[in-house]
Image: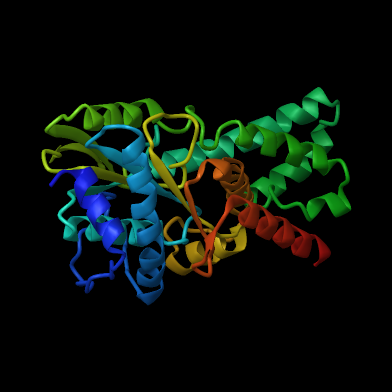
Length: 324
């Protein structure tokens, strides 16, 4: 049966149950990515999948297509890789070919260089802001320079001792905001071309692979001849900077939860410094701004949310943070 027929048959039966999960189910294509599927991920995937089938059924009724692109987006540590892998496995178990692609393979620089570029943009933008506002001086820069050496120059606590420091922080944050998740940082055009090839029925597509070192960048040709569902797991999966996504799924989390996860796996080192915290907060703001486009939103506790419920939840969290 074709994609539409299979989906409609499962939706009409109303008796879908999550299959048994093997330890060796296929994961995304990010080299070296550590994917550990636990009971929490399975429960969340089992909550999402029936809703996803209904959403997919409605999508297929609106237009004739044999190829559909889904995204699983959210902050680091929210379970994107694990849940995307499970959703893909569920589709394959139904006889619907599915492939999981990691958007983390598509920054314009390998991670260590991109991390350095982020920090450079923050610091240069911060200093330029001070110059523009006539706040900069040699004496102040000596103070800033010491904080930079300690990797502590993004720390807002310094404003208490040096009120002028707000100019440095606000300028740096604005510069960073204009880089993170934009086409300056990410090759959205390359990813969009892949989605175009997929929807046009290309049998084989070259996909990029990216590790964390200089030589860890190459391409692999992937067989898409029997793939009907392409799942992108990626923080920026719901971005407006590229086209071709049919059903965005948002896994909600807070910057605090994201930071705790990064500390636990210690993938990037120094994950608890103020600069990383600033990056996570800015990424969270992007996710919240993109949330109205999400077809499915799942809370950190595993509950399906409407956008209105999501919005209220995030506003309540901000109010609690402000009170503390």
